[in-house]
Structure formats: structure tokens, C-alpha cells
Image (cartoon, rainbow, N blue to C red; front, side, top):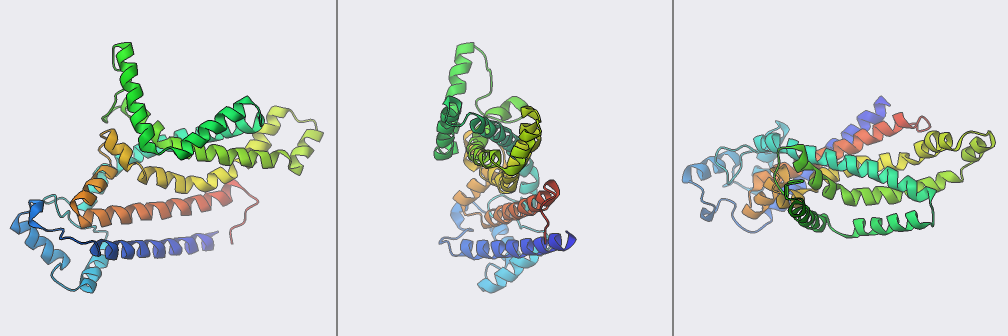
Length: 310
């Protein structure tokens, strides 16, 4: 187990290295000057940035400076925000995105397991048909469409009740988090529902289920201790990438709901060609995704004793 963990960690480090390298050269291939005068940048900021990152030196020299700073955990200083470090931006605003992502994955995980199990129990009957129709909509429709529809629904509900049932936008209380997290988790919930349904249908005809029935075990115990426990393993496998995807995929949702998360700064950095913020957040999110995949791989072997990681 330890050998496998170290091997996966080494693979993760190599992956993050390639992400950082591809991000650096990709950003420097984009036309335009990130330090152009139309960015309202003072001469002092421009001179300090050129000296720190060697912007007047060859590209490979800039790359070596960038990788050296990255090894020290320094993502650099924003090109457009005076005296604002990228590390500080991530430290201050990633917890907001993480909170939103955790709530979204909670909605998605619980809903996916519940609706997937329900569709398997009522296969080819009305509950199954209705839920699968909603699943298709959830997978097909982008999250920003659900965000706009959710805001419109809240406006109408608040108007009908005569008071603010739930805030339409903003951040700060639990009520601000409910609609954005639900909207953000809908696509993943739909995917997990379909995955759970398929897994449940495979387990139903397994030999150990027939053995449990022949022993006279109660249907409830068979469902909770044998069907559900084994069917949920494929769902757990995709939870790592799903968590990272939800946490990193809420950029548009954060913008629409005026949430001060890290995604909002990433979008602004793209608009302003703020190279250090773009590269820093991209590498950070890439490392986060790799980390979550490794964690799920290790937990999978602990959850299912039949799995032996070699």
C-alpha cells in the first residue's frame, strides 16, 4: 500500500510539472502585452515585474525563473493589482469556492445515490422514466442556464411571498449558498444518478444477492448491506474528479451569483491578460485535481477489501 501511494504521488508530481509547463508556454504564446499601458499600470510596477520575472530576457530564462519560484511555492505577483500576491488571492478566495463546491458535491452525491437506487428499484416504471428524463436534462443543459433559471425562480418566489425567501445573489450566509450549490451540483448529480442506476442493475443479478435471498434475509437488509454497499463503489471512484470538477467548474456560477470565489478572479485575469494569476490558479487547480484523484484511489482500496493495490 505504501509503495503504491508513493508511486501515485510521484506520478502526480510529474503531472503537475507538465501542467505548469504547458500553462507557461501556452500563456506566452497568446498575443498581446500583459504589461501594456492600457492596463493602467504605473512605471514602478512595470519595472519591478520586469526585474522579478525577467520579462526582458529570453523565454527559457523566464521559464527557469518561473519554475524556480514555483518550487518555492511562490505563484508570483499580479500584473494588474498593485502589491497583490497570487498566493494571497488563492488563500483568501479559494475557501469560498471550496465551500460552494463541498455543498454542491453533497447535493450531487446524496441525490445521485438516492435517485439512482430509486430508478433501479422501479426499473421501466413511472418513477424510473421521470427521473431518467430529468437526468438527461441535467446532463445536457449547462450550469449557467440552470443558474439563470434559478435566479428567475427566486425572483418570482420572493415576489409572491412578499419577502426574501432566499437571496438572489451575494455571499455571507447559508441562505446565500443553497441555490448556487444546488445549481452547480445538478450536472454531477445527473451523471451519478445514471452511474448508480447501472451499477445497481448489475448487482441485482449477482450470485451473492441470490445467495442472500435464498438464506431468507430481509429485503431491506439485502438492499442496504449488499446491493447499495457494492453498487456505490463505482460512484466513489468518480467522486475525486467530480469534487475537483465542481470546485473548479463554478466560474460562471460564481460570476452570475456575485460570489467572491477564486473563479471570479480567474475570469477577470483572463480578461485582463494577468499572466501570473492565470498560471497560478491553473497550476493550483491542476494540483488539486491530481491530489483528489490520488486520495480517491487510496480510499477505494480501504473501502473495498477485495481490492489490492499493487
